[in-house]
Length: 84
Image (cartoon, rainbow, N blue to C red; front, side, top):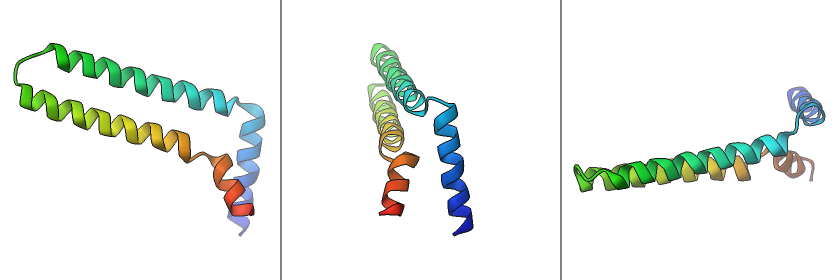
């Protein structure tokens, strides 16, 4: 229980010192922008459409998983669930 309290204390300290929500949304926008750029790059190349399709699907899956993680698994939501 002591480590949990320390982590909650550090999260509060970081949230006061840094704009966490802004950093989170900037990171989400960057991931989405890179996913769009990668999609446009592989769509333009017509070397092997089967490989490009696989790469595009993997890129969308990884980018979607990253955005899902950034959006749903924030420290603020976990603290609320732990307290209540």
